[in-house]
Image 1 (tube, rainbow, N blue to C red):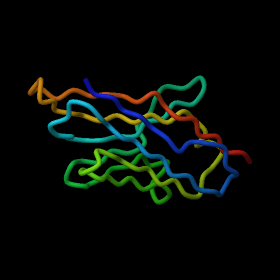
Image 2: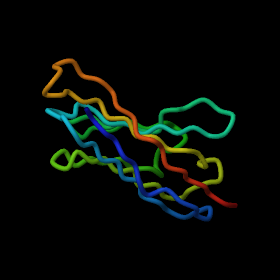
Image 3: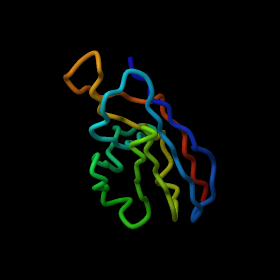
Length: 121
């Protein structure tokens, strides 16, 4: 099996920064893609950023220029650097990693448990 664990959330004032980390472990032959999502109370989960194995990234318009995603393939870890945080960034942030396992050649996406980010005004 594969486990995905996020860390780094917390409470920060508007304009501040946080760095989230997400590490996958277990039966991993290859990580194909990684992504960050968030879900605010009463809202649907939305895509924040994706990063391919090549390192190319895409971002939601709402976070472009403020958030940066990067990956460390050797550590099966993806990071989300969040700068200039706004109260509307408050949400539970989830990491998803698309993994090919040694035990199964078909890629599957595994989710972390989420980490709370709260931005006060």
